[in-house]
Image (cartoon, rainbow, N blue to C red; front, top):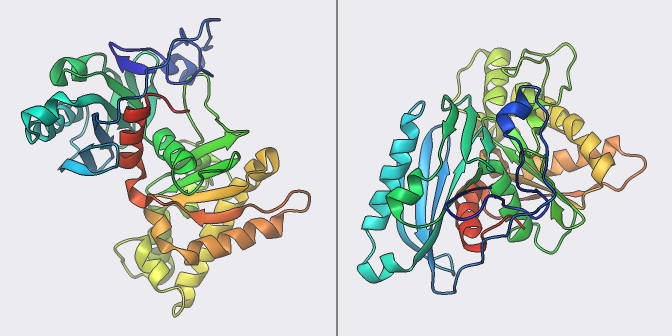
Length: 346
């Protein structure tokens, strides 16, 4: 993985020397070397960690101890393009500057989790459509600035890993985590291992086509899950159906018991999500589906109908339980701290 001046791999399942994800996304062939890079060690119990979770709207940061106690916290708006990386650096500076000299000396590692496509082997932010960067070499810029080893990773990979290993999925070997928000993506753990592509990506569940006559998706396909079941799509569908502008999907969920239009929009979203996940359920037979991200705040209004919709589609394999993540919208930030402390997604 992209560790500034520390190591070049985050998982023993991914070998060093992997060709860049940019090449893989452009049709190139990614290769693996036979050697596996050594893993960073877990930190001492008294070490502190810095975690940054970079989103399309905000960058959130915290410095925490081993118990998760927050010693410094901050949030800033995410600027467009490569300027976001300067803001990440400045936020880290701010948080480190709030510590005492003794606490500053105990900061053992940092983790920065990024959206979009992330080449963790070469430490490159390959592409983010929401923030607007492409092929930005992160390299040692944060190490040089903060003076501690820095790991970079994909935000959803870290959030899903945290929910599986330490949150709602702890104790289970076969878990699908679905992060629902502006987009839809997630992770899949099978046999006690987090599955990753050769270039490090996780599950783009939101771009599984489920409606042949559906809406165009920004990815270039038609009828993807995200065009029906993402937070923004739910809000837009309700406005199209009623002519009433609303502030977001949470308002639609709040109306589901009293508004037939809200009920219909959400039923359509649940059906699309179930259609997108059913192949994953058949292929991997997860014991749990964990819902995280902003939409998970809907609670049982989402988990119960989704479980039923999946169960209705199954004949050969048992229906997984559908539960809410423990970390909610904080999964990325919590995961960044856990990842910095552990040193690898294992």
